[in-house]
Image (cartoon, rainbow, N blue to C red):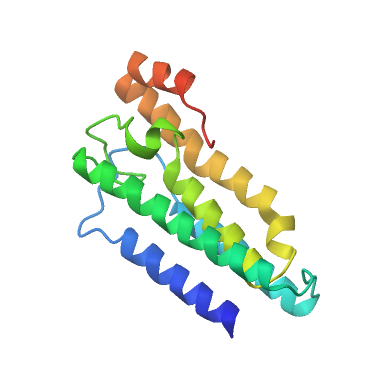
Length: 175
């Protein structure tokens, strides 16, 4: 029941974050909604846990840690989205960007929204006390890197040139 509720809330937040009236595809050649990658792998992990349970030891600390990570991840995503909005650029990974955002959470990581997605993913894994999402984590990270971050970085390099190259050298991809 808890896993279903968490999954439903995650899907709702993804849908709200990525609803756009008209889809602009003039930006990076990203063909998949990034949070969907996390969500699909997480759903698969929860199905696997239902078939072959690999539970973390029972402890309230897992719940506290999980909720803390979920809240931190959502907060990071919200902060990054607000900074991008103030910079008059888009959060859509396939739309054309109008500004290279390097302030706020972008001072610390080039991908704060995806880092937020990762924190939510890890938080849910701890919250529902299963090893499966942790075991499948490399799969989701490789998918995000190849299907999302790679195309975005190529686009941003072509769009902003030396400014983006300098930013890449100054700020790490994840943390």
